Length: 413
Image (tube, rainbow, N blue to C red; front, side):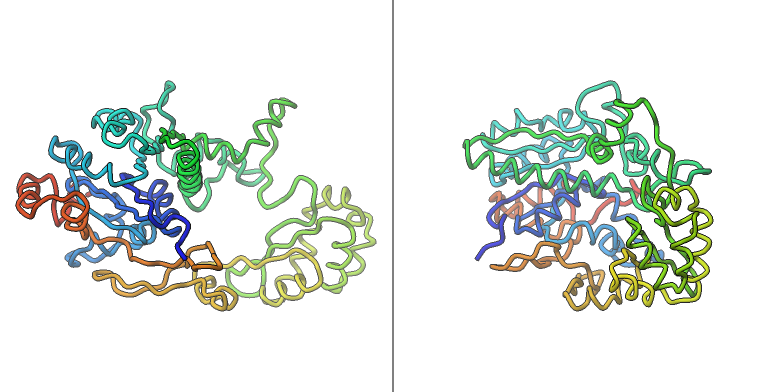
């Protein structure tokens, strides 16, 4: 049996996180993804490897790059040159999808917009992921995950009551946009199967993230009120927070959705008196007295291991979870039992473990079929086997700087 997207080929012009995450998801589903990088401006993530000075082929060792680009082939091609553009247009007929996350004007400047691609493959699907969309007064602004969260409105919701807005710990807009783009690609393929026609799909990364807080925007439209930041608290439930556990920087989250769960919690922490205390006996009373309630619960949580608390509360129907860091996840017994981590070998970066594709198909399990490509690792496959260029023609492209075997990393210094 084949994986769902086996037989689909994608020309991947994306870089950094949002776009490469989309194509990684599609590669996990079986698509053949060909990552096209510029010799003069390779993917920025290749420069974020934190390797000691002088490390051989450091651009192939960056964890960030290798994580986002598994299950992909890789080639180098300067699309800004006439020869590079012509070479890419020879690749497009071999592909079902072209995906890019350039600034809004770049693809048209390269003369590789949808109308140009249709000339060489009528049913091509082109997906563009500009940060702010292809039109509008802010279309030309540069977008990264570090600023899209703010512009999308997400950061305004995060933070404590008495503090400023807080950005998430990651650039959350990137994987959100990537996930949406992967879904859009699959919908484009479904539509083509039904109609026989390709199409142009444009999605704004910023709008994709705002769509996840749509209830907040709608709430403002209805009430005219901007809700306060809540930190770890909840508009209705109490207790609902993150509490210190025994040990250094160890935390446990606990939530009670109704009086019954709270009574169970009181019994488990050997504080039945809290359940009949006028300050905490009902959900509205608890919500009004959360500071005092959190202090009482913290006295107990500080005395116990977070995993012990988790087991005790979860087994008795009280929602709870320990706050795990990267090391905790890596050694987690549950994830290990499910085979969540898969070993990967890379010719320069060595052997490491990475999370398994999240899709679990009964007929043919998804897996990491290929490590992330070394720079230009598959030039010969793309240029000679797929496009049909001769060895002499590839050599001419190399001599002209249209392709290369080694990237120019000075552009990222």
